[in-house]
Length: 110
Image (tube, rainbow, N blue to C red; front, side):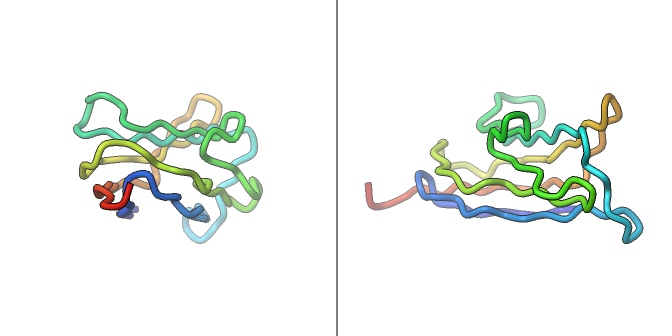
């Protein structure tokens, strides 16, 4: 699934809720680690890294029904049109269901 975001640097990013389904059946996220990274280019330096471990930017809200969210947070990284994906680690089996562009715009008021 491709999903693009746009955000103004240093502003509060509002929480985004997700529901992961495969063939209309919720993906069970019990004991799953979710990771998300923003990079300027494939294999490049990580601009932002979020994970569900200790709710470090991502929270699994209803594991059995495949629900999670990117938490509300201030994103303060350099303006750029980043690429990202969201990776799910099912105890060693890794799947990427979501990816896209994450455009960070410069703010005017500081």
